[in-house]
Structures are given as structure tokens and as C-alpha cells.
Amino acid sequence: MPRPYRADFESALRMFARVSRALSAQGYEAPVLVGGGAVELYSTGAISTGDFDIVTARQSAFEAVLQDHGFVRPSGPGVATRGWIHPEFRLGFEVVSSTLLDGMADRQRVEMIDLGQDGSASIISLEDMIADRMGQFASGTAPDMLGQARALYALHSDMDRAYLARRIVEETAGDFSIEDLEGDSL
Image 1: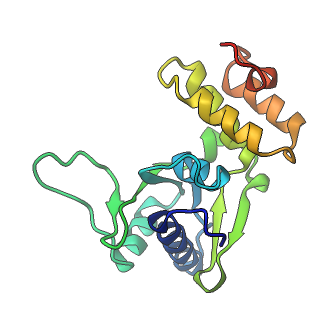
Image 2: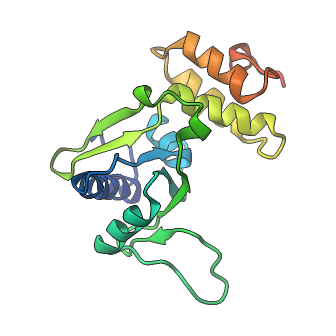
């Protein structure tokens, strides 16, 4: 793995690969990293996150594997997380859905990142990640997501533009298009 990533992120990604391998060994489909963790990966660390959002249809099994790997669920006064924390790095893990982008993302486009002896990590496709950010921006509740979508778009010229264009229209109910990633307006 290249070194532009901060140590906690790399440790969390490697742990995610080990947890994924253990879950797959139980016969379950590998969980998928989405959200800020995927953005940090695709932005090569230019945009950082505080947690790993995970999609898995087997939340109970996934959380049991997290516990087997040393994760704990924070508790006590002032703790509002629904996720799990590992004492070796400062990133939480949280299951956010049982289906990838509510079934709108093409599961065949999920990227596999080989992390050597730690195993592999499944990551939402770049195109679906950008479309998700555009959808969150379009909802009016997350204005900063446009900047993330534009940053990812600018960093990657090798993406499937036709798929991205379709996914942006789907995620934004037709309010935005791929052209909105290219300009400074909005």
C-alpha cells in the first residue's frame, strides 16, 4: 500500500481486510467499505474521515468478528456512537446499511484492494461513491459533499463516465448531472 495515507487509516484498512477475510471464511459475502473511508482511499488521503462506514447483510456476524479482532462498543455518558472502536487506531467502524446504496449500485463494480497478508478489502466503486456524494448534496443536508464529489472526479480520469452520468441522475432524481462536477457553479 502506498504511503500517502495516514497511519491510523492504513491500520484501519488492513484491519478491515482481516475482518472481511474472517467473515468470508464463515461463508458470508465480504462487507463493502463506503462513505468517508472510501473517499479517503480514492482521494489518496487528501480528504480524511473519522470512521469506516460498512455495508453488510450480516451485521450480527460482522460485529461478532469485530469483537474477535479487539473492537469494543464505546459506552458511558456522552457517547453517542452506534459503531465499534479498535484501541490501536482512532477510526470507528459502523454498519450503515445491509444493501449497497439501497440496491442502486452495481455490485459487480465493487473494487477489491489487495492488502497482502492482511487479505483484501471490498470498496464501493469510485463512480458510485461520487454519485452518492452528489445525491447527499442534492438532498440539501450535506453541502460539503459537492466538494468531495468534485475532488474525486478531478483526481480520476479513467472512470466509466457513462455509468457515472447515469448514477448521478439516479441519485439526484435528475436535478444534477455529470457536467455539475466540472464547473464552479452551483
